[in-house]
Image (cartoon, rainbow over all chains, first blue to last red; front, side, top):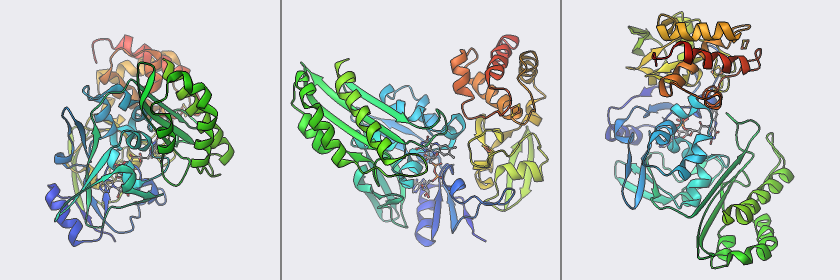
Amino acid sequence: MVRSFKPASLLEALHIRKDNDVMVYGGGSDVMIKYRSWSGTPAQFPKDVLYIGHLEELKSIDISDSEIAIGATVSYAQFLQDERIPIEYKRPIEQIGSVAIRNIGTFAGNICNASPAGDTLPMLYALNAKVIVMSTVGKREFAIENFITGPGSTCLKNDEILTHIIIPNKTYSHSYYCKVGTRKANAISKVSVFAIADVFKHQVTDIRIAIGSCGPTVIRLKDVEAKIIGSKMSDLDLMIESVLMMVDDKIVPIDDVRSTKIYRSKVALNLIEAFLIKELRQ
Amino acid sequence: MKIDFVLNEEKVSVEVEHSNRLLDVLRDDLHQISVKEGCGEGECGSCSVLMNGKLVNSCLIAIASVDGCHILTLEGYRKTKRFEAIRKGFEVSGSVQCGFCTPGFVLAAEALLSENPDPSALEVMKGIEGNLCRCTGYQMIVAGILEAKEIGKGLW
Ligand SMILES: Cc1cc2nc3c(=O)[nH]c(=O)nc-3n(C[C@H](O)[C@H](O)[C@H](O)COP(=O)(O)OP(=O)(O)OC[C@H]3O[C@@H](n4cnc5c(N)ncnc54)[C@H](O)[C@@H]3O)c2cc1C
Ligand code: FES
Ligand code: FES
């Protein structure tokens, strides 16, 4: 039978992590499904479990002029209720799961689960978010796109815990989010796009686009962004076809139980076109 | 593992495996049979309970994380005035058919009304987005909750 640990502090949690081979349990909304067993029986966790969801030290959102630091045990509900956080950043989060899922689910769990369909990820990629991981010997910091290395895999070491997610505290003239799923609530994304842009005097001065569920990880369209930055709004119409071809080259959607390759690329291109042609004009 | 928590305002203590689901502990050890297992994977809301006042699916909660928490099930909630308002609202609107989903919807309604005592129909739909009903077609449940907020005005 696997053992359980419920530390009183982050430091204690880090020592447990160092001295034992344990699985971290945050809100539990991924691991309880992944390891669920027959009705009426306990979840079959593969190894000892380190429960951290209760740790108060990681339950705050700290906001400075330059960044928003989200603790690892902050639930989606807590993030949504925080009035200091810009509405653009809340859009992807308010569509995750359902009321009950948002009460327990966390950014940290979504990131460490590292699904290409994780709905916090397109936004975090587009905003150049960072994650901080800690062990008893110190901390390491990663850009989100370097931290996630493939479906279900990250740079997290066995003795580390993800403690914070850092989002630069900036506003943009335009932001866009669209998630396409089977139903409105509790649906895993078939395709999703998060994008931001700054348009100043009819010129695009910054743009960042990230796509979910169209490859082994979320994809940032850096080549496309570089091509668009500096363009006049009036040029976008002329560029759109070549831009969409670049996007099509970059994404690698697959057929699976939720959708097909063809559907995914069609919808991804449509969403990006909608952002570039319609939303940017608003 | 020994877990202590507060169930419907009474202290309880259970000796269970840490990875037991709160759902099973409530039903099997503590006889809270309003808590139903529908999907067992977080999608139907029939196992809903309030944990420290927040709506959660008890099939997704390992009992170890409940230590020291307050849990409210329909068995406890039905002793309140707020429940009476929701019961009447549901009765006059035909919100209950087979009843399997009802405890979950009642607690989702409580969670919604305690955050927003005057929700619009759209906000009610958002509040019950995680609860599935195979009988009513939802319109009657939305109507029931809108009715309940009028009947129970001032209670939330
Ligand atoms: C019904 C339902 C609907 C859902 N809907 C959506 C949806 O719409 N969009 C979406 O993206 N996801 C959805 N999910 C998935 C899930 O809710 C999210 O991925 C959530 O963010 C996971 O967070 P958690 O804290 O519950 O993770 P947990 O289950 O606790 O952990 C997930 C993984 O992260 C690791 N981990 C957690 N915290 C840490 C940490 N601090 N340090 C190191 N490792 C850690 C765990 O070991 C595990 O591998 C849904 C799940 C369910 C059951
Ligand atoms: S049984 Fe828990 S949500 Fe369906
Ligand atoms: S009344 Fe039968 S499932 Fe809702």
